[in-house]
Length: 220
Image 1 (cartoon, rainbow, N blue to C red):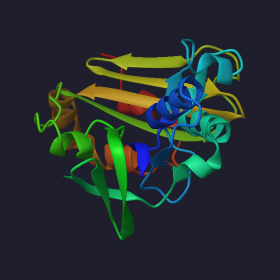
Image 2 (cartoon, helix red, strand yellow):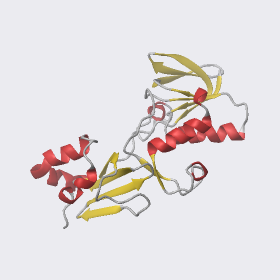
Image 3 (cartoon, helix red, strand yellow):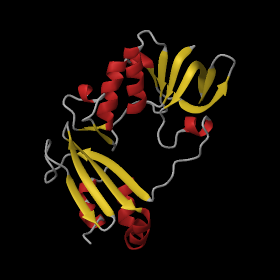
Image 4 (cartoon, helix red, strand yellow):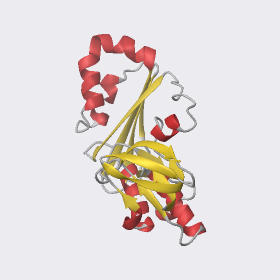
């Protein structure tokens, strides 16, 4: 039986596992993630604050994949189980059975949900409803650096127009991550005339956002 079962192997779940590993040596824990393996994605983190700073070699902006890879290495690969899609929890006399789709259940004294905004663990346990929608939409992508984009170590580019904003961040390794945001009502009115372009920008991560931001988010 596990002492702690973390559902969700993103930076939050991996950080909590690493913190417990250092605070309570010998603790029997496991991190479960639904993905088959970690891969580059369009997310990024500001690593200027502890506890990630020491692992990120100086802080600043780092890719989500790079943070996961570092924490995965320091945590120990034996403590992370991939391909575990959480299904639910069943309370037992002295533990909780954590149930997965197509995988054996595990028993743990304490399950911890680290599975994002729409947490399946939170939906079952506190059952306090879904997150509140702020009225803003954000989308991200990641692509290799290209000529004309910010160089590694430089500040981010920002494009603003009305209620829309786009930012291109250079990150280590010759990559950039792009973040776009818009007020939902503003985007709905804008998409009526330019939806094909918006759809390509949002869905096709191979299209570098920095090449489209000026057209997607024109000056007011």
